[in-house]
Figure 1: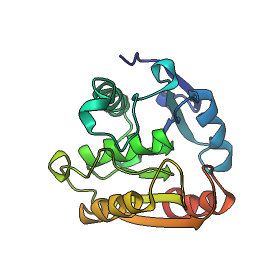
Figure 2: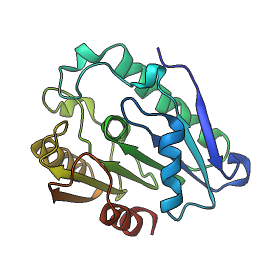
Figure 3: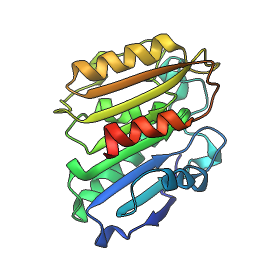
Figure 4: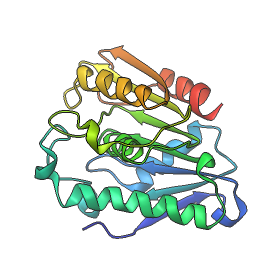
Length: 205
């Protein structure tokens, strides 16, 4: 399963008041996702990026029945839960913990916060949606209490259907998140400047 292999940057946790957990996509690395930090106003944050075993958080598409992605999916979710718990133990309150993920990492990020809804600092999902062959509302609990969430994606996107992005945004909104959803025509499977601008305004502003 996933080992606790976490790459850090930014301020040391002991010296920071805010933390950003950055979750890489399939085939990518913790270093890759950390390089995005330079585009956001997070200079005073502790930055933490877990590295997935074999560069993949779970083996199948995020649209597969969840059982087909086990035990890797549960292992990945457990790792994020452990990381948030450790940050709180080290003095960073939950309202000052932020999340950012791309593609498979965005899906994992959204799935984690929905299963553990609370007032976080905020979350950014670049091209992602909640995990499963359908939505499983019974897996999600808690309330976001206004946590800002930005979800950006392309129409079309080869990996992430727009319908799942929209359904995920609606479900998070119903749980009390302040969701900004932006769908870009023919953006491709990437991150563009306008997404960075909106995420900065809505989540890190």
